[in-house]
Image: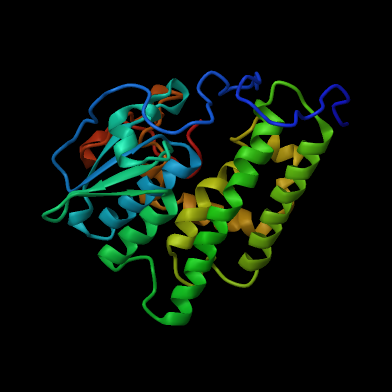
Amino acid sequence: MADPTYTPPAVWSADTVSGGRFASINRPTAGARETNVLPEGKHPFQLYSLATPNGVKATIMLEELIEAGHAGAEYDAWTVNISEGQQFGSGFVEVNPNSKIPALLDRSGTVPFRIFESGAILVHLAEKFGAFLPSDSAARAEVLSWVFWQVASGPFMGGGFGHFYAYAPEKYEYPINRYAMETKRIFDVADKRLAQSRFLGGDAYSIADIANYPWLAPFTEGNIYNDAKTFLSIDEYTHVARWVADISARPAVQRGRIVNKVWGPEDTQLKERHSAADFDGKRLVAGPPS
C-alpha cells in the first residue's frame, strides 16, 4: 500500500525524521564525528570490523588463509560497533573514508596501506597469497564475476529487503514487495548456478563463495531479519542449502563467523581476535551461532 500522506518536497533536506533502527546515527554527510586512535596489535594485518555479513567475509578469508598454511596472514581483529557509531571515529575514517565495516590495514610491507570495501579486501588477500582465486584467465573471470555479483546484490538484500521488512518504523507493501522479489531473484540466480557446479566459481572453493556465503547462509538458516526465511520461502532453494551446509562445515568458516561477534550466547562471541588461542572455549558449530 502506498503512503497517501507523503508528497516529496521539491528539494530534500536532512530535517526529515527518518526513524528506524539506525536513525540516531544516519546523516547525509561523510567524515569523522569524533577524534580517536585505532588500536593496533602485533600482526601484519589489522582488521576493524563487526560480524555482520559484510564483516564476516573478511574474517572467513583470513581464517581460511591461516588454515591453508599461510602464516603471513595472521591478524588482529578489533570490533567496530556500528550501532554505537564507532565507524565515525577519526581513526576509522582514516582507514575507510566511507565509514563502513570491514576495513583492513596491511602492514606486511615497509609502508602500511589501507584496503576498504569487503570485495576489495577479498581480492587483495587472494592476490597477495595466491589463494582462492584461479590464475587461469577464464576461471579467474568466472570467480571475480560472482564476487562482484554479490557486491552489487548485497544492498538489495540488506538495505533493501532487510531494512523495509525488519527495521523500518512503518511497514509498506510496495518496498517490501519490491525487495522481497529481488532477494528471491538473487537466490534463484545462485540456486541455478549451484545446480551446475559445486561452488559458485566452479569446482573449487574460492573468494566467490567467501563473498556470497555470509549473506545467503543466514537466510537459509533462518538467522536474519526475523522470520525472513519463512516469508521468502527460502527452503525452495535446495542447491543453495547444499552449498551452505558444505561451507558451514569448514573449520575456518566456523571460526570466522564468530570473530568480532558481540551478541548472542557468551561462548559464541569473540570481540577481539589476536591468535588461534582466542577460540579456546568458544562454541564452533556447523551452522550459525545464535
